[in-house]
Image 1: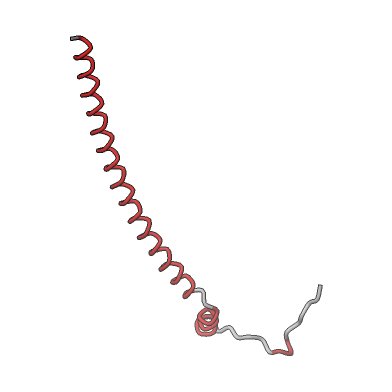
Image 2: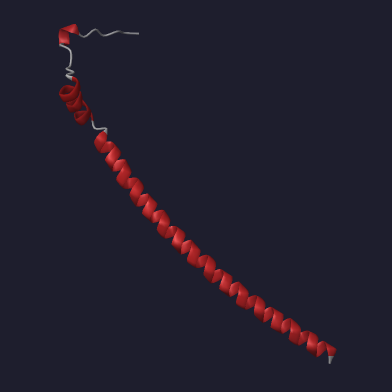
Length: 85
């Protein structure tokens, strides 16, 4: 009789363990999916920011702003001095 009760208790505890493990697995899977979606959104935003940074740092844009806002100009070829190491 005791062994039968022990066997039933072990079966119930084992079943509860399986149910909890399955529940926990599903919860962790849902969290992984949510984090992967967040990662994809951040990667997309990073790509957009890198594109924007490249646009702002284009040589032609910087040169145009230097001419327009600061009145800068390239020096004449004859006034350029090259230094050789």
